[in-house]
Length: 191
Image (cartoon, rainbow, N blue to C red):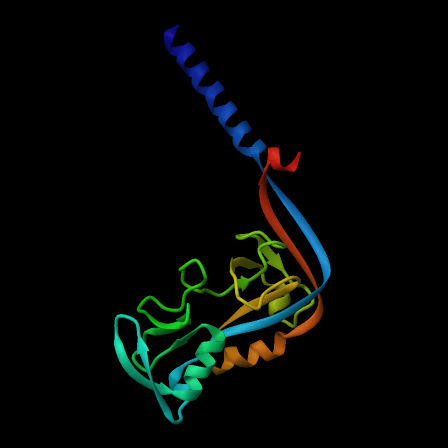
């Protein structure tokens, strides 16, 4: 009899746990028009030769890089050096990352990342921009980054590394886009 009571209690607990878990998480989807979309990428030093400029890289020291590479890296935030590590420009200084280019939270930049205005799209939201050219129109992006120039209805899409990725930034830059984003919200937040 004790055995049957234990089994009944266990089954009841599993049912309550499952109900509690599914009841607390709901997806909320929002769509709107009029978005400005731009792209950002990671330049490669080996694709941008030219006259050199010496800079001080924090915790590394003075090194020389192509001026064109440094200008692109200042604009884009990160670049890949001839040494294979990422060079970042933020907080008024140059920084090295052996892991690769990083987003604003210090995580590796990856395909599907976008920079957003967090007052309009919450961090971590899944975003679709159906008005972009293929293959971007069918992708689901993740709102993981921010940028100083990303305010209001402006999204910056990470397109990858090198010249091909740079070309994609030009191809996707456009006005009047339709943007839909989905967030997971607790049941209390939805009420």
